Image (cartoon, rainbow, N blue to C red; front, side, top):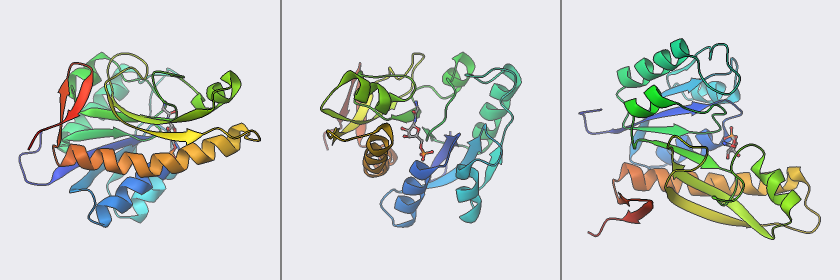
Length: 209
Ligand code: GAR
């Protein structure tokens, strides 16, 4: 862990990186007392890497290995070593589309967070906005949660609701959820960077000052 003063964030993403941009912008605006220490992607040329490079933040692609939904052993070791060398206090998953397993989780226990495009525990897994539309719910949203060994099952840090409209398509609903994510994720990361929250079993609560 980082022994200096600045709270150091490692960001993992596989896609276009709009949540990373929201967090990086919030840091630049002084709304999150932290710095991005490293951005890693399992996808070569991913938008998230380009956004990081444009901001002169350390960023690199790490080949994920032979599996489709998780990192292989070598890749996992490379991710863990890179994040440890960068002395990260928190790992922020921003559209990272692989499940993290044992050694990775043990190396950063209680220090990995994720954003998911539904109101968990409803609709874990892939294309959660489409699951919500298919199910016919009238309200969905997004959830920031700690990462544990399950799929989208860790303790919930924050949630934001989004209405489902009668004429929504998967694309329009996903866009509305994305916009909510860009508000919720920086707020949650700020509470973590300020060490304002405590975990009591499954409940994440504000520390009493
Ligand atoms: C976001 O909608 C995020 O909730 C989702 O991927 C998208 C990434 O967008 N993550 C998951 O579904 C994880 N299970 P971004 O690359 O523009 O931030």
